[in-house]
Length: 117
Length: 113
Image 1 (cartoon, rainbow over the protein chains, first blue to last red):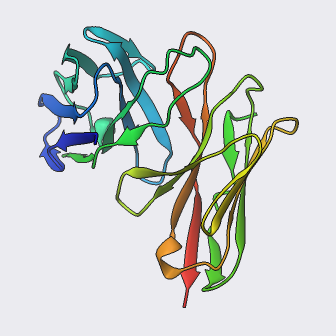
Image 2: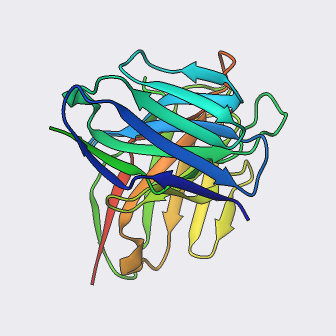
Image 3: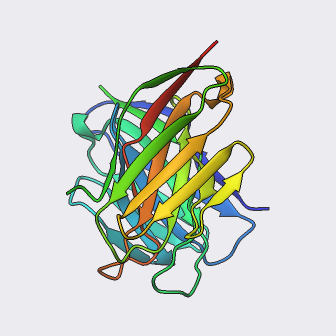
């Protein structure tokens, strides 16, 4: 069965410090991968998605970047964190169906709760 | 019109009650629909997919009305453990964004003893 691992579970960082969150998926090949952020009391905001190694699409302009160095590894980074980067960060994966207009459900990791001080 | 709209609630119901959530979506080209459940401070988890003919999973029934661009979730015989936020999810289906889903902000359900 497929599993998704995301770490760390919680992180407290000062403003201006760098960030690296890692996500790995097991039990599947060629997944679509996603990074979301959920601010307190808000909905899920898609930050980045990837359909393959080295292929990253950004949904919103921001202080963050993403990389996919291996098929089942997705990394979220920042060079200098802002107070507004606080939130609950979620990594997710889905199967690729090969059908342009149909999507598989996404499955989430446990999330990283990031607090910026 | 927002891409996915839900009544935020909260819905406060007694155990054993039947409760229904509604959701509307703006993109008529959307093809995939889901309900997710999110517990407080946890990740969203897939509850069920929603099919054109409607589908049932135990106490949960999902319906889709494409003409009205409307999705519903019915929970029968509510349990305390059903307390959570329920997210309506629709695929984006435009702009080359294959695989992208749009999550509603969720409807909060609180089941009381």
